Structure formats: C-alpha cells, structure tokens
Length: 90
Image (cartoon, rainbow, N blue to C red; front, side, top):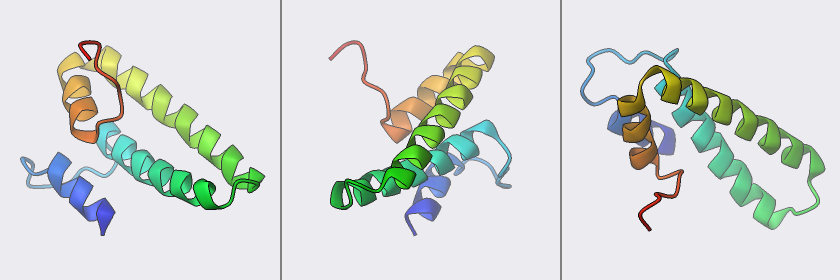
C-alpha cells in the first residue's frame, strides 16, 4: 500500500513504469529501509535485521551515487521527493 503510493508519486508522468530503473530501485530500498527501521525500534537485538539494514543502506548509497553522476537533476528531484537527505540550507 505504501509502496504503491511512492511509485505513483515518482512515476506519475510516465505511462509505463520501468521497474528496473535506478529511481524505482531507490524507492524500493527506501521503503524496505523504513520498514526495517521501525521493526528495529521494537526489536533492538535482532542482529540479522541490523545486518540486512546495513546492506540495504549500502546498496541504496551506491545507487544514489550512480544517479548523481549520471543526472544531477534526477538525483535532486528524487532526494527532495523521498526526503532522505538533509539540505545544506537548513
């Protein structure tokens, strides 16, 4: 349910959703990261979930760095829509 709302926000201008695109993968990882973070607030000693979270954070970071090198405009748009980075103006 949450996943579909993010997908519709990101891909509202496109007729066809490209599930292999960098933006879609970043949105997907962001949803998983948020779910795992809320899980870990309840279960602090779930070390396997902590490891999975660290791996997902690394993958998302690599995808974000790839996107920033490829297209700065798409990177900034995605960052602002997902609200996953602090802006330097704050």
